Length: 495
Image (cartoon, rainbow, N blue to C red; front, side):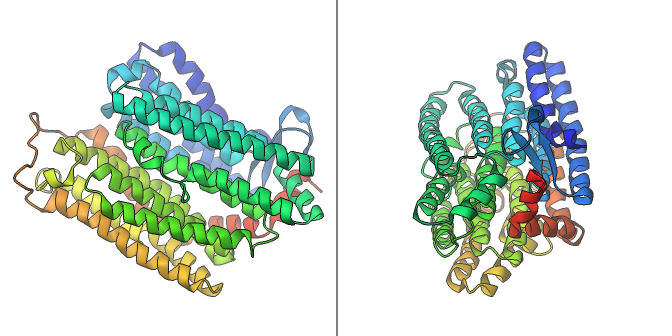
């Protein structure tokens, strides 16, 4: 049963390697990719069910017992995110079949797509902090290739910025890991938790904690998101959807894992600092979303606002807020993927990304317009959609813990998020447009490849909200493990 732990990682890894040999055969590229994606959904769901029934599953690579070898760990928190990643990966893949140019397909688009999933899923399942760095790099190298694929001047310019920022953060990551190893003598996350508890989270440990927060925060877009708007607006829509749904969420996952398992002993310093960063990120993200008049940047800044809200749940760090953070993280992955797929359709249909040059699209593309409005309502937290229960629990946890000002900020920012997205809906779909409205030479036609992914993700947005009670046992189990790190430690070290 322990071998099941690594299977969601091995499936895209094997698929990516296999697809290299089918570079010039589009039918096989698509067929193998889709079969792999569907298989991974089944495997991930089965893994999550086994974790729920049996508890935390671990796999010690090479037979080396922790903390001396590499270990992969599937707890409920990681399993929920692996399932969500597999579903998003499959639906975005269908969208890619009809939106990615043939030339990009032949230049290893699907290979890098699979390896991106390898890095994301590996980050969720690893139980070793250096292996987390390795998985981050696999994910980032794949993202570099996907950003630059196409070779346009703007892509190359933004990819250089993206590359430099991530090189700096990766160098800081490995430096932080080296310092942590020098202080504790271990890299296993469960063993690190014990060593930090034994040594006490004094000045040096708190400094290391802040350093890791800076590293993961840069990757998540927590306050230090200056690189994100440009980099996330140059690739094709399906790549932007993947980035918005998955890449920043890996950074959030790392922050939650580290600050609930390793650096949780001095919350008066670390978690207060996290709360301040979360509030500033929400505010700045919303300001950016309101300031711009082009679709892509409005949507990208909404990623930033969402990051701040999820991390606020970690800062509060009680049962309600952590349950809310897990619910909202799962919701945000699905909703952001849907938002960017819809955004891509809006831009393709209008022939421009400028809101001032759009209008009247509700007549010709009603399904895109109404699903965009549905997504907007979900992101704001309108019941019974997927964003409601997570937002409610985070607010409840914030009030219980006395975080009144930050809770108020989160609610005000939610209303402003609504304003930013309703403005997109009204200008693109409802208004008649201005005199300089673009008239595309060839009308854009929706087909099944466009509709199936957005309808599938929209159903998930509804089902996660309506079925929150069914999901609650899984989310509650995940939050309980985050609240009680000894459960994770005992499962990994088998004490």
